[in-house]
Image 1 (tube, one colour):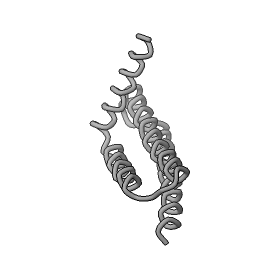
Image 2 (cartoon, helix red, strand yellow):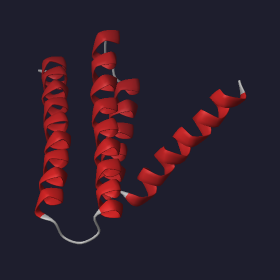
Image 3 (cartoon, one colour):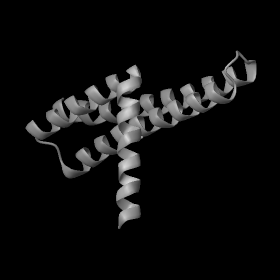
Length: 115
């Protein structure tokens, strides 16, 4: 049980670090909170809520992975390097694809819900 609680402590510390240091994560988290509040006060089905939550978690998780990759590369290779730049661009592209897909899922749900 101690190991599990220690793991949770590290996980929450990681979330705290990213939420304090990464502007994109802060924006995505604010949007996620607004969406959750909106879903609470509106009449969404359990399936719609589950899909939106999955989309939110996917975006936030991919942003955390991107941050970890960028921080690792910055530590291992602090000077400018073309290969490191490509890896960072690919990682950012991953976040964009997940974010765009989540946006589309959200739009489908919200448009079908209100129109």
